[in-house]
Image: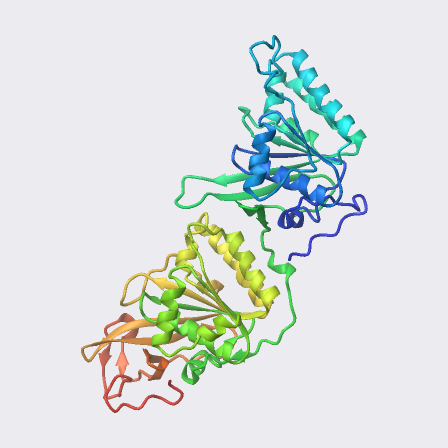
Length: 507
């Protein structure tokens, strides 16, 4: 979905890794006939990446060879079968066999001597000369390091393999589990490129995995950390979102929220290419108002998407049915997509990928994220939340999407406390508040900011009724509504009063 950088004249060809997102990060794939280092701790996904690389070559009619010192051929087939793959058509060469490890073997191939290291290197070269593979995966370098013992001998053997593979025209992935006591920078200097796979542990939920291209000679690539997921079917890489690469032409017109009074409060409605923050305490009506705004877009024929981090789809549908908001039919015909996400499992990169899929492939122009509080739990830290949310909102604005962000505030009355301050990132802010009057708990709504229109500065009464969202007249006879305990100075009728007439445009 990202447009990868064009291949440079020095490397007009690229070898696809078989992972679309990784090819995007690499600027189109790996320049062929070079040696690359893939490093990561055990369990990071190196073996899976190596198998996908060979299977992609096989799909393109290229021969592949998997050289293994740390796993048996049967173990590799088991890994492949777990992903629904078959290694048929690929060569698997075990440098360590049952015979080589038997008690009768006077010299084990894993004996750390110069003789055995030479035998290992010659065994690899003989297998390559025999099968003439186009792609090679060597797993793993930790065994070579143990055989060599001496750093100089180890470097010379790796250099010998590098020159040999280059002469054979092979594209090679060397897998390293980083079990050495210190960082093996000499491998970085030898390899044409270095890919680092990492994962965060010690947190609740699934481990968060990331990939970084530490080096790729002569090629422009996407730097930084990129989230990836290791699941049944292989590795999926989610390139880091760069909003500046995704501009689109659109007219920043205001679209109705479906409620005339709310449109007046916002200065015309929700503007395409802008985002509006709905902030307030739990239960005040933020989610229902957000869905009502999306429903108005759906009724105009637009496509919409709503991402739920706090509640399930069933709860949302039950609430909408009770309020007479018919979103089910839009779900059934695919015009609306509601995605319930687990903040303990989803990564920021994966979420950005879902949003881009909705915008670029489904044509979504109205989008809601509910709530930012739970989304925060998917992030590695508050500063990353602001940076990644800034990129995501900038991307949505540049694509002409009207975005609604829901933010829960702590406390029921007065000025609530936020988990994170996103006010400066928001183009418009709609505040919801509880207040007490006439022995009842009432609600109010106020637009405190809008970069795209001249919004009202009045505070209006607000409630949810059988017809959905209702917005009343300005609370001109009340002082202190935003503090939660107002002083009443008149006889203004309220939405819940018997015989009260709602303000024009209220629903």
